[in-house]
Length: 77
Image 1 (tube, rainbow, N blue to C red):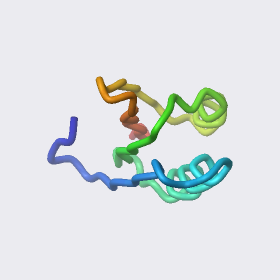
Image 2 (image 1 turned 30 degrees about the horizontal axis):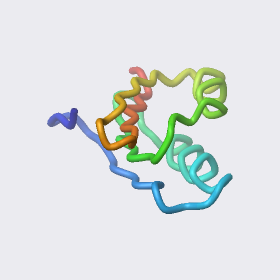
Image 3 (image 1 turned 90 degrees about the horizontal axis):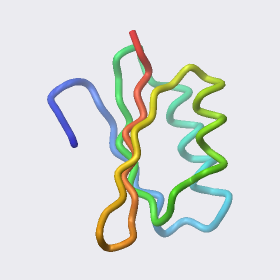
């Protein structure tokens, strides 16, 4: 999932709600065009998706077999 393009990594698995959403939104606000944020989360953050869309961000979700979730959030060029 991680590639050579500019990116940041954030793990919010152990944070209580609503901290994961708060932290993710803080970081995505500072992404440069073309930069990607890779997030490790312990569940699918359904309430986050509309907020990312409002900000013009692209998101991909990958569920892992252990119940965790990996998000790839990208600010387009």
